[in-house]
Image (cartoon, rainbow, N blue to C red):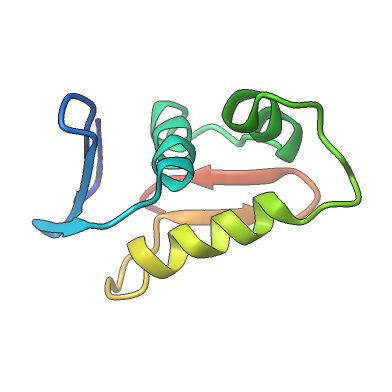
Length: 97
């Protein structure tokens, strides 16, 4: 899978941005894979909870926000082009702009 200069190798289970390998935990990898498979589409926290965590969404938890933050720190931090965007009240989208 590829979005801009972000690449996810589904066979090796490796993420790369600008040619550099990004170390991800298993959950971060699964979350990134879900976002990349839905690139350009807004995914809600409910969608993420059901597809990545395979549980119903608990509105009292911020675990999804925390993991999105972890991904941003690893994927967007060193790049001038941010790929993970928040749409307030709607969810998240992975896209170039």
